[in-house]
Image: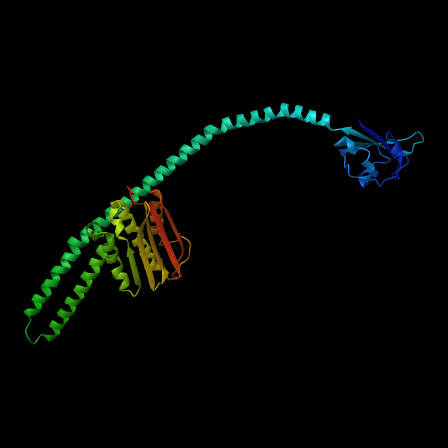
Length: 349
């Protein structure tokens, strides 16, 4: 204890061990005034900036304790004592030394109990991710197999039959009598319609399975891909950098798939009049961009009709690349895919 003051209810210092405080009056705080006439005790760290504490400032931080009491005449008084906080600090250290190890030990026990569970969950998550990737690969390989099958059946079946029919019709037309003008006109119409249908089927065949991709390269395959799009009135600019000839065949296939799916969404969902396709090398990465001036949005679509984009995104990410959809400088949507040029797996594989 370093100081004692005895207060009257009006804030008068009745007595203090500091002679300079005898007879002085100070304004008491409401919490202190409320103690008079009770048997309560109140303790707090002292505010040594108050006028009443000028005599205590030399002691540093102090704990002040107010104890309500009564004098010999039964009048209420308030005894205020000031205590050094050194013992409190020492007690705090002792309590900390006793409780901190206990708390850390409890945390350690909890961690030891949670680590096996966390490892188990991590293994499950890893297995689930591996299963998901495997299912995705199986689905995409099956998709490519079906494309090959459809391509072969179209080429060896329907297209061959229609081509043969296209050769037969002119021969039949030659054997018609001169007076059969109406029949000859019908055969001419059918011949022209067959040529148109055969050309359309060959375009579908190229879209389903681009033979030119392996034989002539990405630029030729993309030009073949955009030809029917241009016929629909959409102005498509193609920029395929010649350095892409140095990348792996899997990366070229993936680039083609990204372009095809992006262009397909431009036609189906963008209502665009202009589109731009770009494929280039950026260091060790292939960067593919498909953008348009349509009414699309800067968010990857997740609704019906966009499964192809989601599969493409998974395929690009699986190679260690990135895939995103955002606003285009043309005013519409811009699709960007980036993946290693030495990609060893793609969803077209």
